[in-house]
Amino acid sequence: MRSSIALAVAATAVALSACNTGQPRIYRVAVDLSPVLNLPPTCFSNNEIPGGTVRQSVTNWRGEYEWVIWDGVDGKQYLDLGEGATFDLGDAAPISVVGVIEGQDNTFVGTETISRLPDNNNYSYVRTKVITVTFNDQGASPTGTVDLNSSYTCTNCADGETEQPGNKNCSTRLNFTARRIDASPTTGYGSGCCGGF
Image (cartoon, helix red, strand yellow):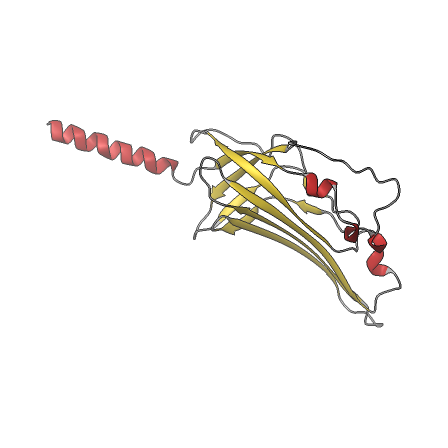
């Protein structure tokens, strides 16, 4: 009788643990935003920081956010950076994340490409925006990076076109530290706690 009870308890424990498999992992994240607050001159038109630009120097100040990772199928995972996840990159096109980013093996890469097909003058352009979020792991206290790259290329460009606002090339890297917070299988989560970047 006791063995039957023990088996039943063990089976229940296994079933309950299985219910938690694939549950969303919610992280409080501290992001070092200083790289986007102090972009290099190459991110601006004519490779010059505009006059009157306010440069902000911060020490031990971090942006605070809430990110969520949840499991899909075939080893895929999805990263939700929250509402309004937008990164301004000087005179390069800003990077805005709408929805979630698919990834696997602790790396999430989202790419947006806007292309203009050649016209009668063979004029065309390609604007590409890439965000890569990499976690060292998905444990209790992961660290990682956010790589941002915004680029613009054109064929038969107009004079000065690649120096116009929105057409510069810019890339930078942000470092983050996170802490996983507890959530039960019935806990809901929002798109973000603290606004955008």
